[in-house]
Length: 315
Length: 166
Image 1 (cartoon, each protein chain N blue to C red):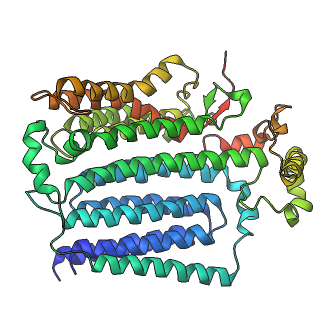
Image 2: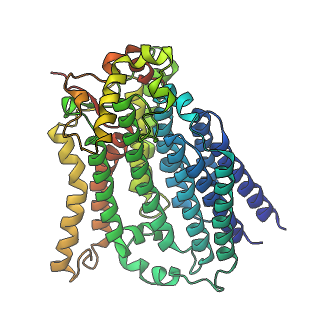
């Protein structure tokens, strides 16, 4: 066994151990903190699988934003913990569940061990046409050229999810501010970090967005970092989430997908197919779409964490 | 055993762990968390398959890797929607239980003293709601909002708990 595979084995065991902790931990808060640690370990696993772009996404969204969301929810639901814990199913049901889960896991493991060799791959096809897109990062090329339809639908799905979250608002606060109002000690560490970190975070976020064309990175990872900076300032009570009835907010939320659709259909006239780019303009159009999606994704991701409107519009 | 197979098996175990958590854990938040474990297991399996497809100078097949990024973002959106639904359930009923069809539960019929104190306003509303639900009618508008009362309005300590505890 080489050093690399020994390290991978240790990493896989660590991931499983922390994942098991998130299931068996007594307090939801402890489980959620375990989930954040698990997400970070998982991003190292992505690096071990040579998927740097996925590792960045996992660390930023899968661990970071999901962690903030779940920690916030666990804190607010603390009062209900004791009553709901009493509904724990009996031992027989738990044994049955364990048996079912072990069977499912075993079936997947058998499938993993009997995967075809050599593995089917689209990597040569991607490499063959990479030059035509003008983009150096193959993952970005797949996201915005070869499989642009997936990315288009995804950018619409996140906006739909936000509409779903907003629609949970009671009538009396419709159009108001999302989530609870946050307070933090004005001279505390949170308020301090919320003043010091954002300038650095904004530059890092924009950099990750910009290098995404040629190196690991891109709009999702960049937008998540920008959203995290905004959330940090909100949580320190230095600013409030904008009321959801603001026109500028709604325009920005749909601007990215709308421009993506417009460029996609313009492809019918200029390149003969929906979401096709004319020769020589591929990289420019990809960057324009990414730049348009960046503010949309930043706002959507941050407001998904902020939650449904809970406070009336202040006049 | 090579690295992709190792993480493929790790993915299978993650799906099993998550499935167990979804079935056995009564708390909705923990169910959401366990569901994320299942999702991560599926993603990791897909990533292991991408790694096996390495070639043409790439460390892994870029097509599944790009789809994974899409998947992670969509999984986050779904998690956010699930958490919002859960918080709304808590706001509307003062509890986070998924066992809603059993009004005969001891906590409902015989609330402990601190529950009366905390959710005194809510308790009546909840009873009314459950009666409506029992008669199988769909309440057109929750009676809960006519008076403009919410757990956050009626209970300052709840409000405080929700604020800035990050």
